[in-house]
Image (cartoon, rainbow, N blue to C red; front, side, top):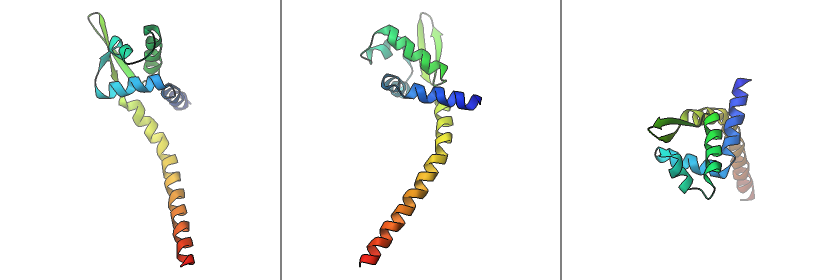
Length: 111
């Protein structure tokens, strides 16, 4: 049950475009809240709320450096999501392979 709650939090966090922008920035390098705020067309309190959601979902870590808070991506949460999606990926690969086979049969029957 805990796994489902964690996965729900990750998916909800990823559903927001602003949070995906933050993750994209953090994928490349660590950043302060101020640097992240500059990349988004929203006020700083909104950025702080987005960062809190990402922290609670386990997608980012934060550390204190004097007066600054430095954020970094935690890819482990995305690995867990990828593991969960693997079952569905396999299902679609099988279905698309079957579709490809049927299309090839149809072409062969027409010739």
